[in-house]
Length: 405
Image 1 (tube, helix red, strand yellow):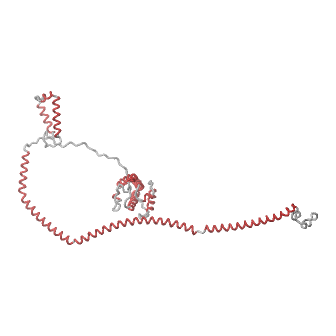
Image 2 (cartoon, rainbow, N blue to C red; image 1 turned 45 degrees about the horizontal axis):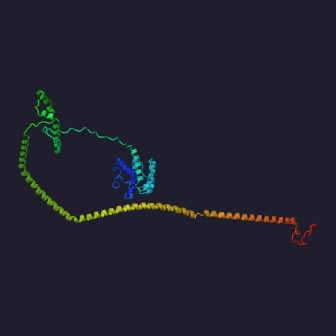
Image 3 (cartoon, rainbow, N blue to C red; image 1 turned 60 degrees about the vertical axis):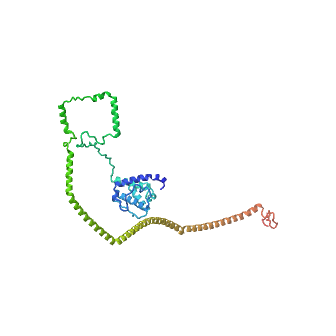
């Protein structure tokens, strides 16, 4: 994946991380996960997986399981081997009926990863936790007791100094120089330090204070001043015991070692015999194991190929259905003779109309011709008949008196 596209998955990474945390609250590792559906990592639904079909299957089955956790009586009405588009549509309908707000496009949910998938799972998990009445409790801080007092060794000597309290090599020199500086600053005090000490405390009161405080002291003086001699005596007694019991124990150990060595040799002989007898079977078993592993790898690969091919087949079937519907619509429009019949009827109607118009035109032209013929003698009379014509002859003239030619 390119580096420039990494910021685009920030929201998906955040939602996927919260989804895994909420799934762990629902104990999905025990109730949902199995040999096929293994526990999720925190970026599974944020990026595309090598097996896209397995990722889409994990998403749909996990969503179905969450819906069952929300309502145990609910059962899906579809099969996991249905078309992905049908699965996504049915799941969105169920989420909408459950009043779970989902703003995702089915095409993005079909991929099985991305912001839409993480948002759907996050919203569903929030609703499931709300239905189960899960509440985040207030943080509980452990009670931190006061530090215990340091253990005091009762056997330690008085005025003894631990190794940690002893000054280092450089610190001794610093202390020495500090003391010299103090002596130089206060020269008069040195005389008081070397003077004779005179105690002003009553000896009886001192003894009473010692008797009162002595039982309360945790460090006690050792009573036996010859403790190292007791240790030496104990070591001598232990040495005598070892010298008396070691020879018999040595003989027993030697016998045990000889018996164990003979038993080991027998076991080795039996082992070599068994290996020689079953060597061919072991070789056959190894070969069969290798063949089995190869067959399993081929099976997994072919299963993935079959899943991808099934998805492609379903997509092609959908496209084929769409094409069939288009073909049926076009064939129905092609074979439909209703427009042709309408056109024929229109032509017939036009012909009848044109005939009627031609008859009317003929009648009108005939009446017009008659009207013209009637008007012509009147115009001739107005002009003076045939005698008034420029080309008229005497025989053709009317007699104005009797009206005869």
